[in-house]
Length: 322
Image (cartoon, rainbow, N blue to C red; front, side, top):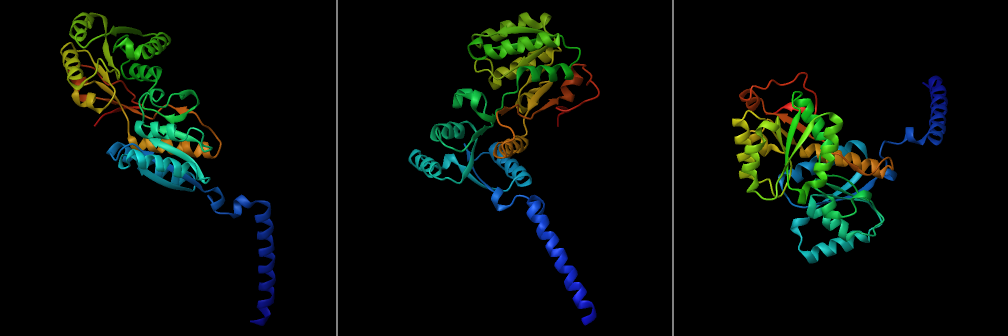
């Protein structure tokens, strides 16, 4: 035993010295990924304790755990009265360890942008329709809205319905003139005709429908305060199906109501996308706003009624809906 002991001790000593030198030269290889020095404190304000937001939080937590080491504190804002919310703002404004504050939902975003105007830490918003109306200076803000750019939607519509050349779009210029103008420019570049169905009142819709059937190949419904309600959406879809005209909607309600295609969000996916943005900001890789991840569900049952074949191959974000 004594014969082998000395050589072993000598070899071990040499190995330890080599490892020590290696760690001093290349510390990132010798330290566990996400060491304490790279840990971040992230505060997530959530508008309400409802399923879509909870799914987003779950996706955010799961993705962050894969990308960075972070202490994530989630605060349901609807549990706090105005005075308690002010105390929250004071508490986190005075903490120097906060790495980033995230807001999920419009109420949370309004609170975060109002409460932490001069804060040193970065902020992001998520799951908000028209964030510019909630937080103001959208050009300098980082986040993920629920707005799919018009050109992205038109590309998907064109991909899902290659034979469509004339797309009728219902909108009220008071609320969606900017959307229509962007969509019109995108339609020109895609070589399709965008047929404006401008509405000033809900009473205009039946007349416009009667007049438009010979001039459109499909109807595109977008979020619009004047045009859209559940009853109006169902009325438009019913009339369009009778005319063998497909309707494109913007959430699962439209899909369930008989739209031939609907743009839908998976809130868990949006949470993961928010986490990716957070990691990029904290690691100083990239900031700014991003187009939300989405899917476009084709309604196979409705398409069969309309005698429209599903164009092959189907590629994401298009998929046959459930």
